[in-house]
Length: 212
Image 1: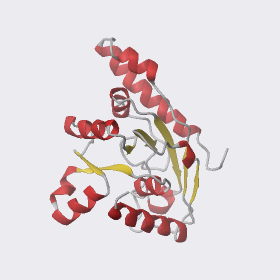
Image 2: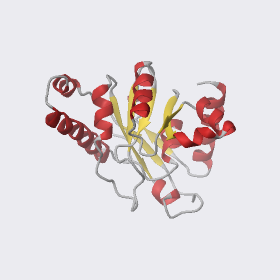
Image 3: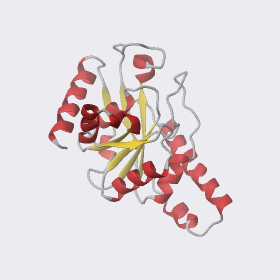
Image 4: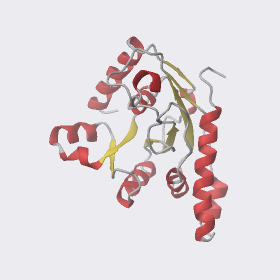
């Protein structure tokens, strides 16, 4: 963690502890070194800092490329390890940035659902995360956040003091599907991307807001 990231990390941990009475489980499942994909459900703008604050290693985040056009904001985002992506997060440039960071040993948060839930329930996974997983060599840690929709969902103008919980699952590896993806046809390749995304989402759904 650089100085700017550490300051933000300390700040968010304090806010989550005092205002939201947060709890974390399974942080030891996340490797302290090397590339890793943290695949989390997405219910609120609170999710990225919540997932990152629960870990003692620096994590990379995603943000719209347009936000980097503002000099001060752009400088802060870069210091917080934020990856610029297009609005949908699926552009070739954004994917390359993500893969480069994973290759260089970074951890990065991705949301299989693609966007925040509208009703607090888990949504189907999109194939985009499957593509990223297959093209990388990083393990995938499923993550589930609880309480962020009630605290700061789409319909809330300000965060409410609601209990937040984040749970990190055991790492998932996709060596067999990565090997198959190197030789299969395009139709099967697309199916593999969705299969990986569905398996990750199922792992997220199995996580409960309590320790094993």
